[in-house]
Image 1: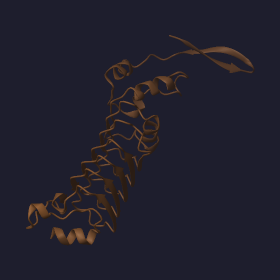
Image 2: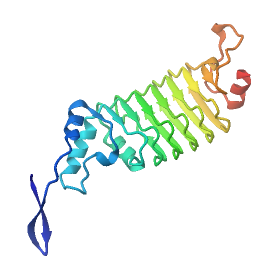
Image 3: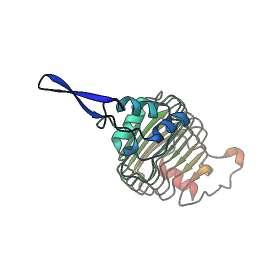
Image 4: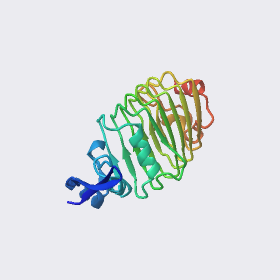
Length: 234
C-alpha cells in the first residue's frame, strides 16, 4: 500500500496507508461498464489520487447504469456529461429519485451516445438534450417532469407516457418516428419540428388511432399545435 503525506505546522509527515482498491474498479475499466451505485466509485475524499482513478473508470465506460438508488443526484449526472466519455453509448439512470434535472449540451457532448433512459425519476423536472447521435430516449413515468427540450437530429423513439405534469415540449429531429404522449394531459406548449413524424405514430391516451386517410397522405406532426394533434387523434 502506498502511503500519503500531509502538512502539519509547516512540516510534512506520513499519514495512513492508501485504502485497498475495490476489485470491481479494475473490472469496470476493462469491460467499459459501470453498473453500481455512485458511492461505490473511488472518492478523492478517501485518498488524494482516487479522483484520477474515478475519472478513468467513467471515461472508459460505454455503458453507465445507476438505477433505483439515492446515491445518484444532479452532481453525478453533470460530472458524467462534463467528462463526455468518448465511448459512452448508453446512460441509464432510471428510478433515481434525487435527480431533478438532466442537461446534456452542447451537441458534441458524449459523441457516440445512443440511448438515454431516465424513466421513473420522481423528482426529475427539466430535461435538455442536444445530440447528433442519440436515437432512443425514455422519460416515461417521471411524474414531476415539467419541461423537455430535445435537439437530437437522429432521435427515432421518445417515450413520455405518464408524465402527468409535463407542460412544455420542444423537439427537433429529422428522424423521430415514434412518440408516446399517453397520459400527458397538461401539455400547454408544444413545438415539434420533426419532419419524419406522422400523426398516426403519436401515441395518446394509451393507444394510437390510425386515421382513415390514404397512407400516402398521412398528416405530418411538424409544426402542429397540441390542440390540432388531439383533434386529428380523435
